[in-house]
Image: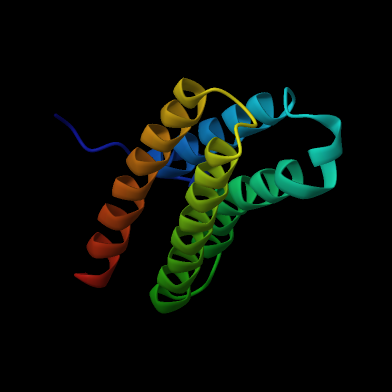
Length: 123
């Protein structure tokens, strides 16, 4: 399998998957009760958007140390998102299958993030 040339953060698989996760979170929260708009809906959306945004911002930094720091921030947002999703599941804002699907996707993004962090730390 050949190496893919990375010319932009948009070429990073982790950024692409984080964007897909954010989109899925937006679609899911559209069905949440309207009274949750400023509660769980906005919390989930904010955390989900923060993940690809921090990956992109870190990519744009001048040195590897700053890049890694932004990837750790993205990882923190990912854990925050997972917590919000678990709460949404507990209070039955949507069905278990929907949340489980988002959690599986989230874990996948987490693995990709960790792999990128490790690769950068070992350079």
